[in-house]
Image (cartoon, rainbow, N blue to C red; front, side):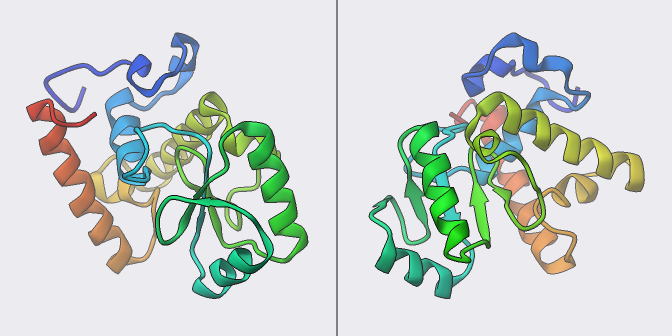
Length: 174
């Protein structure tokens, strides 16, 4: 346990059976919090975020999305999300972060509907962290590799995780 207060999977609107994960739920909560869109609750699954400005502009021209910030669209439900993702991929728009854990389509290949399934996304995120820990050892630096293996991006992500730990301890992380 990394923090004083145990957070269970129900806080991420998940069923108890997701606890097959070998990573503490608090770490997954911190990751979900770091990956969330601020206009939606932690763990909200129906998100498509564009990492490329060029691809985002292309999508704005060809798709009718409900944009919730500069880079993120809310696709409202799993069926819409899967259809939207299929459309984007057919149009060669691929640098996307998807679902509650913002899994990147280029690096994490899943069945399309799984990106928008809270349980499957949670399990995949858990597996990514677990594999990094097996390979690099348990550290916050390794946990930050969830976001990037690049030093500059890892350091920024570590600052976000650190801020979220403080929020979690104070009860402000919701």
